[in-house]
Length: 486
Image (cartoon, rainbow, N blue to C red; front, side, top):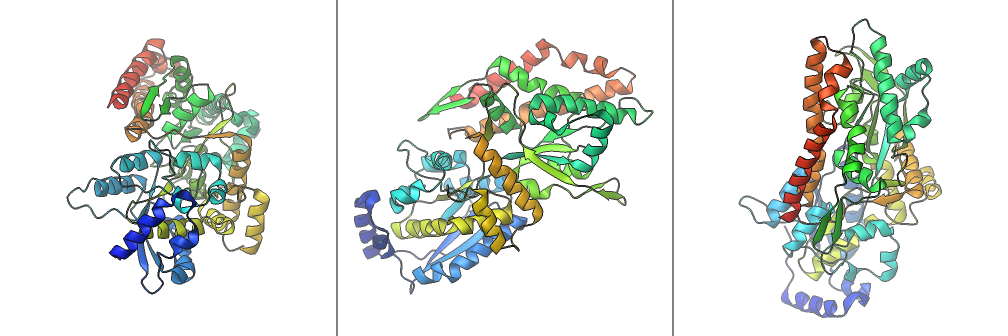
């Protein structure tokens, strides 16, 4: 339950707000009273180890800085990301049965943009000094500046990117037999080539024709489309203010098609479980691209059946990119949005977020959760190693590898994420499902034709024509134009 601010406190807050961004922290501190603590409610989508790490730091804050200043933080996981988005939007729109919007909630830019349009998001700049603002990575701060005024509306607390994850045990068997090299997996074209070779090799191990196994899968198709297009020179959603320019380039999308849809219908790629790490665990694939924050879920064994399994080693690498494209990787991970209320609650929220992202503490959270720290000084692996040495209990060997590989990638490529716009969630959802759903459906048709005795080339032929691609691309373009026009 929020502690409501008295009229005198509101008046003081208004006076402080008029002082602008240069207002000193000690002035805002007058709004806090340890004898009358303010309670802040936070909604996240963290689960498992991430939730445990976050909750542990919330407890630490409440027992230290929170107790000193009069701030009590209560954190609640709302399920997965989609569950959180739904609950935040229902609260913002005051739908029947929805709870009050929390003081702080985790959000991606499109959700924050939508809630901001309702006038429910606080500007964070006023509660931070220029030095504090400059201490965070520029890309992360840029992502958080939404709305017409360009003020900071999303506070970065932890970020992630995509990595390649590989079952090294089964890879080594294949590589020795087929002469494949890990270097081939540096490019998307190389992944497609190796996936075909893996399918053909596994097919050769049995007398049954066309029963080869898939090599590769990916979790976020929207990332593949958005980042792939950006690597090849086109920004799918070019956003300026409230205006969105749609750039769907046929040649680029044909390349995206040839390096996902075609290998998918042929059985070289797959997507069976909820996440590709699920497919790695069942042996349905041995390589995947997924979020660095989910790398801890890559399996340590493959289950052959309900009663039989075998241990595997894994290896991490940078996400593959198009051979002739720019070196660009996805920037992802929700930030924290502070709800507009009164200066006391807003300032208390920022006090917690600044505390949470202090270098050593943010690194601790990163090591325990698989996310990456957000400050410039913390994005250095030598600095991270020092924190590791003093907190050996925080991170597993796997998590240390995740952070090291991800940090290396961040330092060698340009990070990119789309800017927020009206309909952004729907547009991303379409990119997630359009090619993937068609590939799944057509793969089933290919399998049916294989069962009838056709060769793989014959079974896939009707789906590999220019006309078939153009039909899909035209449909995608029309659907996307409708979303952007709304």
